[in-house]
View 1 (cartoon, one colour):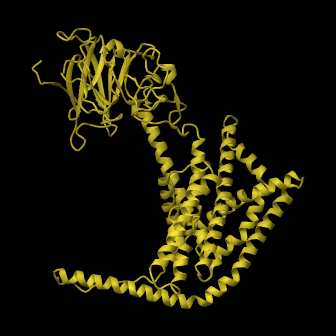
View 2 (cartoon, helix red, strand yellow; view 1 turned 135 degrees about the vertical axis):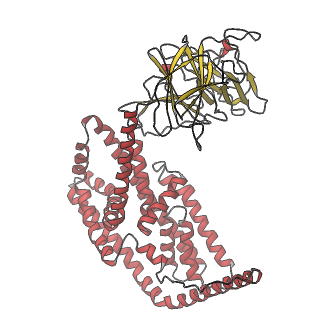
View 3 (cartoon, helix red, strand yellow; view 1 turned 60 degrees about the horizontal axis):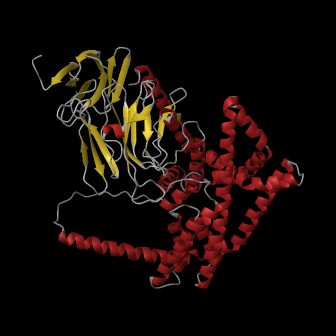
Length: 615
């Protein structure tokens, strides 16, 4: 159980981080125009930087190259605007026609809804209701979404005015900015910071360049498709529809809107609209599943859930610009976290998890099961940050191959459980094993492990001597004292087979079991709702050694237990016990006799033997 001072320091650090995150979010909201301008400039600078580096190879100074790149980018934007200006003007003049059709379509939908409501009212009992006053918001939701984050036309003009200058200065002073950023960190951390900056640079370049190419391809394909079906303003509609595809996932629906609105004056049946939606969805699927993986590659490693949450958050914060900036912002944060010590991603075929203070430093280690790559992670550094290092090999718990003779293929681990099966006061580790189904690259015969703890902190395989070698494909398990004799028994859950129940006879026999050491089984009791005191820590002290266990529920893979917490205490007739309850309140040390079951009640901080006896 961690000391109270350590918990307080950790709680204070968490509180400060939450406060800092709130301040950052508030700043991003209230200074949206400034933040969006800077972030947009950063993205454009990363997009143009390869051209500046190319000009440097031809011995053109970076300042001049940055100016040339910015001017070329402005020329490209101006040319695109000139191509679209006449079409936008024509569409603006024709907008009343589309607005009338759209209003008629909307009115028809509203009439259908009113008819449906009227039918429901006919079958609903009439109730006397007080007059209702309805306040109608005359604001336009879509327009509000588009303008949120920009705030006003003045802010938009400010954005357009400052972006070229910011991009130029970022490009011209890139090396100075990098050097200044590195100087902010201690010399020992600058290499890691440099790698993080390089990873961010590579990710943003790949994302921006790939996204622009994908948008261009989809826009051209949409333009051709709209021209073939005779849609008005095919080029303008194709450009807008293709650009909307830039928004992940929901972009496919947004891309439908421009052609569907334009098509209201041309098509009178439903099927053309269905065809437009189907073709645009096909373009979007090709872009997402083929073009983006090829052009962007694995630089942007974000799950679908992460992208969705990012879109919701940044869209809420900044509106339309939030949808555009959500992915690069979130991907940048992930890359930075990946390069912060302790936050590196761990890519294993994770199966089960178990924790225990193996090293005796007062903080739990975490054991992760996998296929041939089991990990025992221990906290490193100042212990206030999640800086982990793997000690599975040095402790002898890799369990990467079966312990059978001539075993070559790797093992597949599932459930893990830390318990003291021989009551010697040293924690042991059980690991259930078994091939997934019939994977030829992994061991077919893969018996479970019972790794016994040694005084030096290492572990030794003890399953064959314990007699629990099981040819079944075990998935889950539980180590518990089923017959209440002070010895932990074992139940195993097997795939497509009956369970196995192993009785622990200790140093004795089936007819006369005998514990190999003293023991103590403890349960906690406190008022509802958390009557089992989940989240508590129990300390058992024997001489100069302290055993610590956290009260948890479930755990591992397809296995777990909640009940008596078993402590092997070696050769100790009496031990001292202390409990830190879930809310952090700690009781005092209490003397308890070994080889019994006891309940510790929070009320009065007293020990009650079980079953209740007169002694």
